[in-house]
Length: 239
Ligand SMILES: Cc1cc2nc3c(=O)[nH]c(=O)nc-3n(C[C@H](O)[C@H](O)[C@H](O)COP(=O)(O)OP(=O)(O)OC[C@H]3O[C@@H](n4cnc5c(N)ncnc54)[C@H](O)[C@@H]3O)c2cc1C
Image: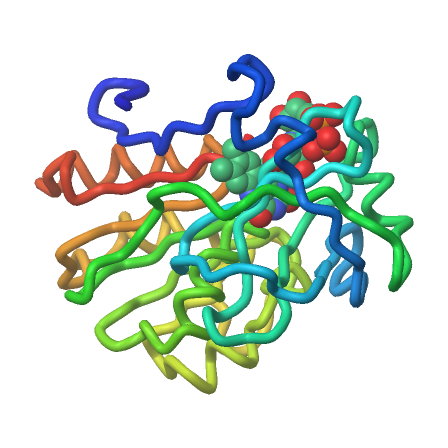
């Protein structure tokens, strides 16, 4: 359960599980793509009809053929939405994502059941994300779980602040977009970790961190050094 000291990493099992495990190709469901739209350079939103219930913050395993172990994606849609959405980056040398980017409506995906324990409580929380790491917070927001939450979303580009207008309308000044390489009105010039370091800590029962390992480890260290308990920090690392 515990990764580096003090960092709660949600366990994910994959190809080394026993036959019949949740990502075994025999356990994956074949589902038709409804839409696959490039929403920013090299990032897509993939949608397919929702076949199950899930808890906001959960992920799914996806692949395109049984010989390629499933990769994991956070669900980026609400619990009552008819479609399941995921946000994914096309990794140029990746085995799956360049193929995902070629999908057209009607093509078939192989999909696991939802899994994972990256969940929020009902109290005040700070959500911190980079890039597609905003996906679980899109899901929580679209599921009506936004009261008392503050979202810090970091990206190199303004276009990479996915769903910025949606969050700004829903959360007002409790949505803090952060951008390192471009400027825009209402966008903090810098990383979420810089915003966090420079200000009083937001009032929070929990801090949910999601995205690349660099941001997650830096944010965790800032929080712990400022007196936040390990148990209040919950992390989901994509790569
Ligand atoms: C619980 C969990 C949830 C995840 N949710 C998402 C999600 O919602 N959206 C998403 O885009 N990814 C997500 N990921 C990462 C995803 O599972 C894959 O690692 C990613 O899509 C690359 O797959 P691939 O087969 O194309 O690359 P692979 O052939 O598996 O190559 C992996 C290489 O790509 C690097 N890599 C992985 N992701 C990125 C990235 N975004 N940018 C640059 N390099 C990368 C890895 O460090 C590694 O070196 C999640 C991972 C986990 C563990």
